[in-house]
Image 1 (cartoon, helix red, strand yellow):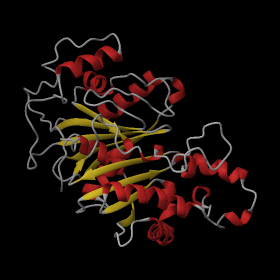
Image 2 (cartoon, one colour):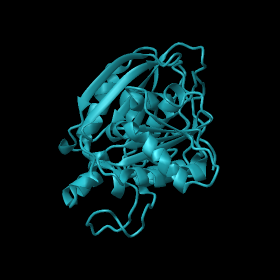
Image 3 (cartoon, one colour):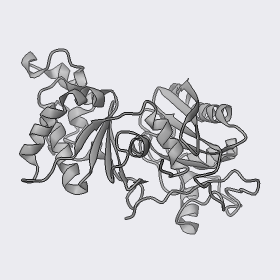
Length: 344
């Protein structure tokens, strides 16, 4: 396994992103995936690259279950030039969602725009960029989203998990700037994660690394009544899980007055520490950055989590910094950064 090596794009006139792929099959996502896997080990969109001194812009899109956020950024400074937000309206079907993605990319696109990056929940295959799973947005599975966006916008496209995009942005320009090993954890409806090592996004052998929400925490013993007995991280402190725990609570003293439901339970400090202990022992991060609405709520209680970490970690092993996300639009910025892979 190796850190992901970012491709860089150019807006030059001779840029022909798919000129080596003249006859892509259009029958099914399986055919598309097999074709790419057979012929290429990494995505080939253009022959030339964007250098750090060049002017130009890139677009980043964050595809969410209810909202689509998108922005255009300077490729030289990462300064945001324009921002858009649209309703996802997933109930209208995934073709409608694709239309919206194309519309926002087209509206943001300028003459100097070089590429578009997309962050989405779930799993996206690499290098071809086909959606494998897409929580809360039905109908997207099997769609080659990179190829589709290129064909409909004319812009080279890279897609990745939204938590990866969040972590990349925070590592390069946010709370993890300057740190060698950055771990990001997003706490919302679910639990996502990302790993950035020396400024590069680590994706694992197949592109599915950092699914922290599916790490087993207490196997076979979820904290609420359910037929799903995995006992993974998401079943303990995702937003949806904590809602169920609130509903089943018998002792009001188990909860901390005035806190949002996702972090009311006193056990949460220990459970978050269990997750962090696993991450620290495996990855030895410089910093762990928490994002999402519940992540910001947790930030007020980092001291309690650190006390628990001292109990569970190896003796004398230093505890990395626990930080809350700093960037307002980390998901869109990280998606844009997928296309460049450049530090500032």
